[in-house]
Length: 92
Length: 382
Ligand SMILES: Cc1cc2nc3c(=O)[nH]c(=O)nc-3n(C[C@H](O)[C@H](O)[C@H](O)COP(=O)(O)OP(=O)(O)OC[C@H]3O[C@@H](n4cnc5c(N)ncnc54)[C@H](O)[C@@H]3O)c2cc1C
Image (cartoon, rainbow over all chains, first blue to last red; front, side):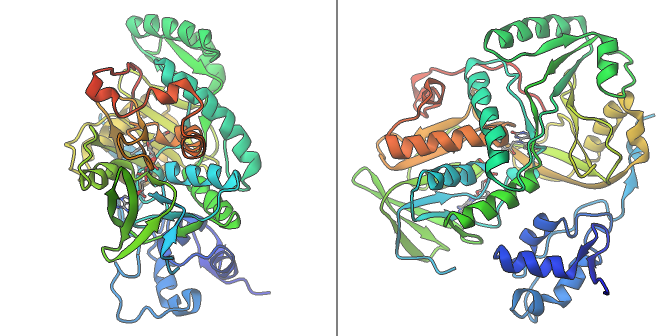
């Protein structure tokens, strides 16, 4: 069977996402993110959160069209843009 | 979810305090409990905290309440599927003779209250964690302490509360509380709808308790104290206890996912949540002195959350004077998450029995500030 990965960093499948949304009554991306760690891996949500936005109607049964990031509760981007090794910050 | 015209218990705030209050009430069979959360569960300090849990404090109130809370954490992990609490201890690294002396006394004091902390010599420290000892002279080890992933806490408790029939209204800010005749009568949600409250209103809104209460003329001495935290990419499991560098208030903890959380004292103004490069430099420089392994791992994210600070660094818990059914719980400094189980249970006792069970909780009354009876604590750190 083909597995559809929705979040590559945390290896979360589309099926798992649909399951927790349904069973746990999740209605927003922020809660979904904290539930399955989607968007919390090295990509910083660059891939998975966009996929979720594209699939919004399918996942949440509601349309995303014409709504702002705030209305959709799109998680804010947090620095750094890309993971950086900790040694970058060490005082020498 | 459409909110009804009237509810029995209204809890304002979906952080650890509000969630645990709802849990202990529901477990006791109370019906019609509603949590109102302005954003999503964990938006406040709870979703931004490090998840450390300890009883090694320097005041009777904190030590005794935290001993009780830890016994609740141990039961909660049985009662709530998915909730994690790992009793891997706390290790306080001591780098000056003075600190060692103070912590010897502290350990004796904690032992006298039944918290089995002990002083470790250098080689005992090395047996416990893979560390470069450098200037470390000794450490205080607290075997009763541990860690509980805040994210797992949030979703597992959310799921449990739904099972128990608690209504959770997310994205539903409470914009007013109406009081008359010495009682809270109703709350206003989304600036438009009034919901009557038959039983109690619990204000568990973290640093925002101050704003909510000020609207009804109640002043509480509460300040926001912003603290940074960073998380790294997953790293091989290598460090079990939460480790604190006492002299600088820096700490590191590795949760089950493998990610490392590193914090440090880095004071910034009350309302300023700009992320500071200086914090990253300080946190990484100090921690890598003892754990150089971490330098090769990647910084994933950094954020700021608030400690909720009162003048005596002890929480405010109890009924608001002259408002018999309005209860507040906040002011936990950097310890509100670990205290949430015992505070939630005590709020349940206040609501159902009219008073908390433990004498220590009674000392947390708001009135103490006006009466000038401040409590004492010396071990608040980053
Ligand atoms: C970086 C950092 C590290 C920390 N580490 C630890 C630690 O290791 N161990 C520990 O025990 N503690 C730690 N703390 C402290 C701990 O996070 C807090 O003390 C605790 O989470 C407070 O929980 P709370 O439920 O009282 O408040 P919060 O978690 O802040 O919850 C309050 C909620 O109320 C909501 N709210 C606000 N106003 C309204 C309104 N008008 N209507 C509806 N909802 C509203 C908010 O959105 C928020 O979700 C740390 C804190 C920080 C910042």
